[in-house]
Length: 96
Image (cartoon, rainbow, N blue to C red; front, top):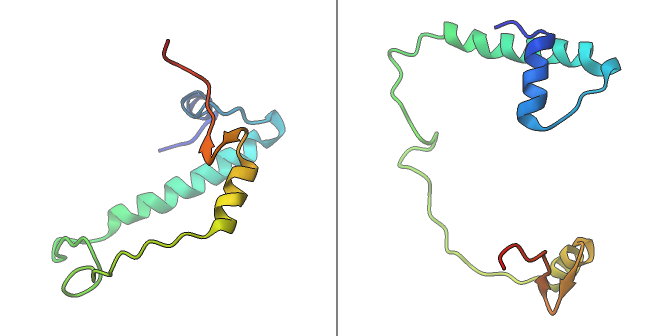
């Protein structure tokens, strides 16, 4: 797949991002390198490989789910929120 200016425009539209004109050529080059790397994966012979969901023998080990409350983290999160009240995020009303 070749990354060109037209494809970059489509990607901008899909991602709702706008790339500065002075950075367009660099972005095209970077995306082309990424696509080229991914296309190399098509050359791998995986016919003898078994499909897996984990690299661990016997599956993923389970751990006990222990809740942990850190008040400092909560304060930091609400400090960076646009608006909060009584330990909740305040968001605009969307349903009448």
